[in-house]
Each structure stands twice: as structure tokens, then as C-alpha cells.
Amino acid sequence: MNKPSAPGTFDAPYKIEMEINFDDQVDDHRRIVAELWCCYYTEKRWFRRALTRLGVVVFEFEDMTEATMFRLSH
Image (cartoon, rainbow, N blue to C red):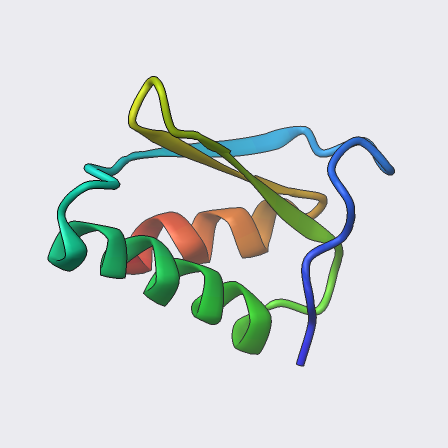
């Protein structure tokens, strides 16, 4: 399992934003599934930032291939 790194501890040039309604349990479940995907399907460093006021979660990746695979699966 590849747990998230602390934000800002490495250069993460590949960013993918997901709009999430954090007040909707079903929609917030998409964020949880996306985080689990990263834990189980990445090998390089990654992290996510939850911008709750904006309704956005930003997933940031060190590796372009992993970012691409994430984008295609979500």
C-alpha cells in the first residue's frame, strides 16, 4: 500500500482536480474511492489537497503515467 506523502514534500508536476460536494455522502465517497485507488495502484509519491470551501480535491502525482491512469479511471 502506497500511502500519501505530506503535501509539499516533493515536486508534484501532475495535478488532477475533482469537483466534490463534501456535504453529499455519495459524492464524497468518490473522493474516498479515488484515495484508495492511489493507495493501491501507485508506486511513486502522491498526495491530495482537499479544498472544501471550493468543493475541490486536487490529487498531485510525481509520475505522469500514474497521473494519467488515475485520470482515466476517475
